Image (cartoon, rainbow, N blue to C red):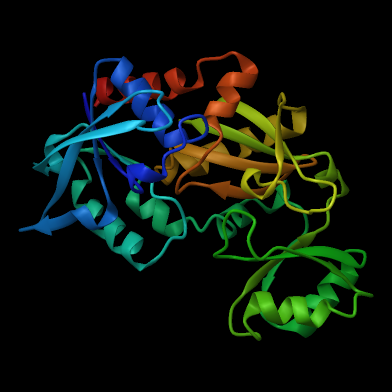
Length: 314
C-alpha cells in the first residue's frame, strides 16, 4: 500500500507527540510506502491531481525523525491513500487543496473526504447534534449574545468559529465589565460570528478527546487545564491523563456516527466536557500517541488496520 501524507514540514515533527508521525511510523512498520508533501506540492494537471512527493523514512530520533528521499511526481489516482494532515487553520490554500482532491473521488481513498472537510467547520459541525451539546448560540451581535448569556445563567464561553488550539477563548460573565470587550474582540467588532456556549463547570476536571476511526473508538485522553487557565489544550499547559468513556460519552459516539460516515469523515476527534459535545475535529485530529502510552493499546495499529481493510474492500 502507498500512502501520501499532505502535511506540514517534517521539521515541525515532535516524535513523542505528533499523531501524523505516529501514523507514518506505523505504516512503515507494516511494510507500506509513505510519501510526504506540502499543500503547495499538490496540483491539477488535465483534470488529474498530481503531487511532488518525497519518500519518507521514520525513526524515533528527536533530532531527525523523518528523512526524505528524492523528489518524484506522482499521479495521486495511482496511490492507495492520501492522508490530509495539515494542521489548522482551514485557510485558502487548504480550501483549494480540497477542491483539487475532489477529482480523486471513486479512485484513491482520501482521509478525510475533501467535501466533508469543507463542510465541517470544527465548531459549527457539532451544531448538527444540538441534543448532545451544551446550550449554544452562533452570533455576532453583542446585544443578542449578552441576552443569551443571561438566559443560560449569567456565565458562558465565547470562541471564534475559525479558531484552533484554544486561541481566542474567553469566559463571559454578565457582571464582567470586560464583557463587551471580549465579545468585540472575538467577533471583530460584530463583523464575524462567534460561538457562545454554556459554561460547563466540569471543565476544571478536564476536556476529553475521543478519537474515532470509521466510527469505532480508538481511545480517549483527559486534558486537564492549569488552575489559572480555562483552556485545556496541551500546548498552553494542559496535562494529559488516561480516561475511559462514560455512558454519556458513548451516547455521543453513537449519535454522531451515521452523519460522520455519510460525510466521509473517517478519522475524527471529539471534544467532550461533562458529557457534552463541544467540537468535532476533522482536519488533523491529535492525541493518538498519548492514548497509546496511557492505555497500553496499539491505537496507531487500529487506525492503520482500518485503512488496510478499507482498501482491501474497495
